[in-house]
Amino acid sequence: MRSRHLGLLMAVAGTALAALALLAPVASADTIRPGYERFAGCPGPEENSEVLLCQRVVVDGGHFEMGSKDVPITKPITLTGGIVPAGGEFANVVANSEGGMSHVKQQVPGGIIGLTGLDWLVNFLNLEGLKLYAETEIAGQPKAYGGIEEVDLPIRVHLINSILGSKCYVGSFTDPVNLRLTINTTEPPAPNEPISGTTPTEVEPDLPFTFKAIDGVYVDNSFDAPGANGCTLTLFGFIPISINGLVNSQSGLPAAAGTNETKQNFDVELAPQAVVYE
Image (cartoon, rainbow, N blue to C red; front, side, top):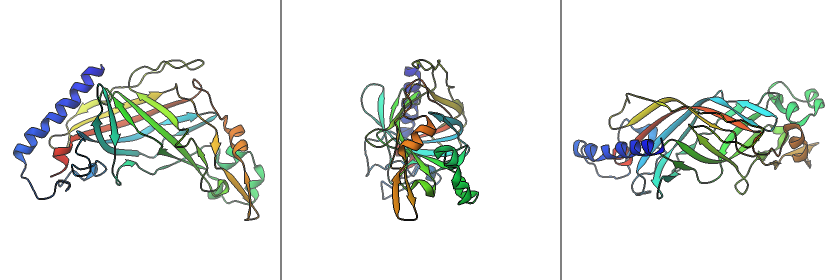
């Protein structure tokens, strides 16, 4: 399975030679070819000459369960960047200032009261103020294995509500939530049982010299999750009180490996760097 996907990526990269023979050259090496703007997050040859392929992944459904909180993915998340071979079947995923993971807030069921247990907040906040959002951010070096088969994705989750302050996170750059997303079958510790992802279906791309596949599913139920950090309740506008412990107790954090799960529906597009940039 893994060698098949790796071979697929190499075949896509090989189209760059044909593309360069057919497409007219221009002055700048880091000018995106018209029509390929969706790959703008991929470093150009002047930014990183080691990039083999540009990629664009859209996660458009699924869920993220961590501790006692299960957040549905209702708004699409886009990840753009470039793939840099690092030896063997493993590659680094890199991005420029326009790439990485898009900033998308997913609504957390139960809202701020469900996260903190502070029922009295309902007397001070309107309906919007009671809502809680989670935004996933990359917190380390993503890696890809076997092409699109598996992805290591270190993240931190930003919990967003004015009551929590601006720096309330689960995970950090030094202690991230380390996802190993796979389209294959997981081998989680108990009590979780194995679950399987889905290989995306290749379809006709709408751009020349690109690869496109849809309706894939990444899964992981083997990761652990650290406790909250940076969550601060400010009383009377000037008295800060840490509520990390309160958030943890209401959210079941820290959560050991074998008690968490994510399923992410995704589509993927790949294009050689030499095709994306003129």
